[in-house]
Image (cartoon, rainbow, N blue to C red; front, side, top):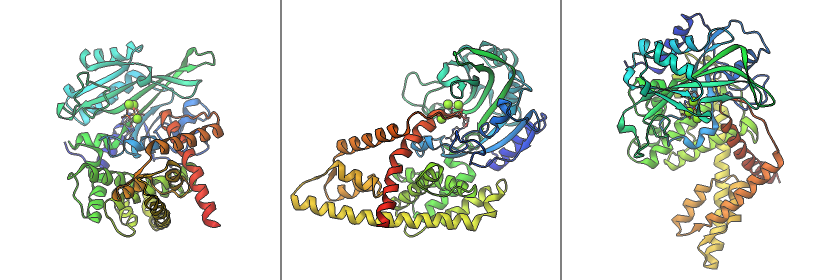
Length: 471
Ligand code: ATP
Ligand code: MG
Ligand code: MG
Ligand code: MG
């Protein structure tokens, strides 16, 4: 059946309410009393104190729909059908209350009875050493053995840092059909293509990892599950990607309207349309939770998302300030659940527009410098702009490198790509040296390592930009 995204959220939350869970509103995107995390990236993240026992939960069963940001997925945006930098994560949690059997059987009930998804298209992954879980799936839920896939630690074991609560997980996949598959002969559950869509992760926190690497069983194990609402909606609506889901498509359509382009005509245009659609959602939600664009931390994440959206707007030929138009569509599609969007509407528009104007100025300044470089090249009769100059434009002046590349190409010139890469690498190394070891927590650590690298690379750049422009 074709349910809207907002409807599906309600179905999930009320289902778990009927199983004795306390329903809570989403926590803000900015972590509270937790500086190990830049932005909330999973439903369990704001509940960490309940899992560690640091705080007593209001109820031992809870359910939420949590706003999430994963900047580490930024390179996937527009390329895969299933990633957004912003998404909503549905979750049910047990703090030392129920465990595997209930978690699995309720998940299965929701998927097969409430959503009525066909069982023959569902697959589950299980951690290779977690036989009991495989038995529950097979014996109790009736999932055939050839729909149960065993995976290693990397995919199906969840650990936060070196010590503390951890455990195996089990994920539910939906087979969207061979037409979504790739050409690999080994294409199966876990393949990176879009055929088998991972949509629900059930984490069984049953161990407490010790300093010496041993896993002690927790006296009261926990349950933490996470299901992407946009992915669920894409599945239920029978559409190709999260960008085709009703509430997201509304934004996508608005982008197309502003640009006077059609979706689905060319890969390059679609990529830009998706980037803008995704990034404006993230930026709007971040603004509503009090994040300000800046040169560091989460403010820098926001700045990067806004600038990237504006940049892709230019690629699509959108003229003038346009973010404010899109903010309205984002808000209209989510304000029912997230009332802060409507309450702060004027503020959000203003904040994003100021940032957009600033970036436009940056582009103008960069263009002037690039023009000088080009004149110098042409005077010398050369064809390749050296890496240091390219890097300076990018890093010191915040001028997007693809813009440099494009403009040079138009004149029959090119970037010294190798030298540019070297400069980037040197910068990253400087960042690493300056940063030392950092210990991040969260369900997706790689996200933060990647993000952190990006941050340090660019931080110096925009910082310099500000210094120079005040001279
Ligand atoms: P993937 O392997 O597809 O990147 P994941 O294993 O990183 O997903 P989890 O950390 O297990 O995802 O998060 C739980 C659920 O949240 C996923 O099963 C998925 O439904 C959803 N989810 C994760 N990342 C994203 C994203 N970037 N955009 C939309 N939904 C997401
Ligand atoms: Mg991921
Ligand atoms: Mg995964
Ligand atoms: Mg997962």
